Length: 572
Ligand code: TEU
Picture 1 (cartoon, rainbow, N blue to C red):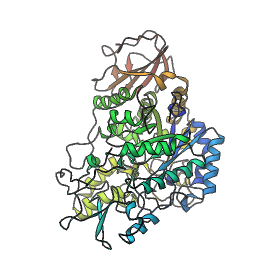
Picture 2 (cartoon, rainbow, N blue to C red):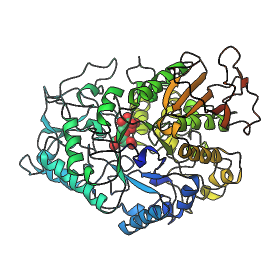
Picture 3 (cartoon, helix red, strand yellow):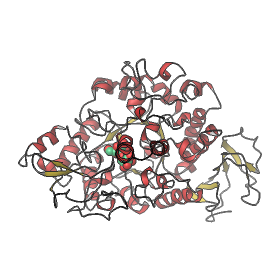
Picture 4 (cartoon, rainbow, N blue to C red):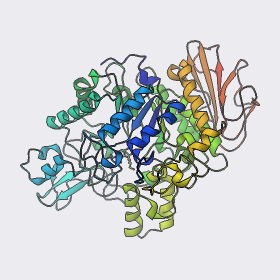
């Protein structure tokens, strides 16, 4: 149960792989396990400690692998279990670890359990899922699904509806049923016994639903709103996760990260408490909301310019909220959100500088940083201009509902997709400027990001000034500076509109981080005084010792070391 302070995952950098788009070894246009294995030296050179592999299990083909039909096998397009074992061995041989995706809030509707369950109300598997009779010729409650429409799907054969918080092809499992929990613990043990180093747990705080599925307040113009208060961090969640830890996880030295939308730092502190918390860390979502229009009926697809003080407030709340109490995960991008440089930086003129500045933020806060494939190259959003180029169920549903059925202007909806669509970050990894970016010899399953002739791994590795090399430096620095891993966080100018300045303070070492969130030169005169003994550790503009100290260039980032510690609360 005990998670010692020196836990390896606190000092690790995680690299997230979306297998379909990392590297194709057999020319079918889909990335695969042998492709990943062929790129292990690339990952090793970058310096990452852990690889998180998005789902590679057999699936129903609806949600990028998150609709699983068999939890103990590898999907044929990704390879075989032997290929997977080779990947694991290759990682371990290089001193890296492997974290697998655990998707157990729901299965595919083609999973044998569900096929059995839907066959009759008497099936021994019926109770593996959440069935309800309809109400007044409508669904059992007004809950909406994440991907649009009702969260209930009527099964005509039995006249009852099943709950699906995501696509109708992703029925939710019934965690109240001890047999379901046993199945999950067994499948976790299966992978742990094969030698994996942890789990990323998909939508793990959705396992416990409020009994009776009470209606939620109707949204302004949506019949089926997300009933988050009835399924996020529900009444029995902690019981389930504590049981999971006791039954399975406590027997292995592994890391766990729970995906937990709608969770507060207080709840996260309980979930990740070093002694009693069932998880090691969680993915919080608060900073993913700073650019949403929260007054909209469907905020998820909206985009407004974010306020830097708000971003600082949200990140700061998590830094101080979990310091000494739990553990943060740090991320600015993943397979569900747009590219970080397009969303939080400037992917035009200042693409490289802003990508490096954001990386500096990612790597100098307290927590375990996650690098999503391609972000180390500063990849921007894909922004396909034709809806035919998109593959994501969520994006296609939006287009169908709004344009095909709703008659809305396609250009308007494409603009939303350009800003927030999940396929922006799901395009193949650009390895070279050559054919299909060196990703495949066949036809890629989704078009390439059009920037690949300039933005690709080969070009980045060859250019010592690239975003890639800056990531390498940051990953190394994180290992060398205990202040980054364990230091206290203090925001020095919380209300400044473009300057993000914070201290990380630890025993004999203090770091000062200065980030310019904008394309304008920022004069520090009268804003913040640099300590006389400040020594530049890393910066995205000039080599150490050559920085004009009084002004920050567009999107400039600097990290200074101050060895004399002023232990007096918030200095400055
Ligand atoms: O995501 C769950 C989640 O809460 C959202 O980020 C979700 O992707 C978004 O609301 C819809 O665009 C996880 C996975 O990361 C995601 O890829 C899956 O689609 C989802 O669960 C269902 O398994």
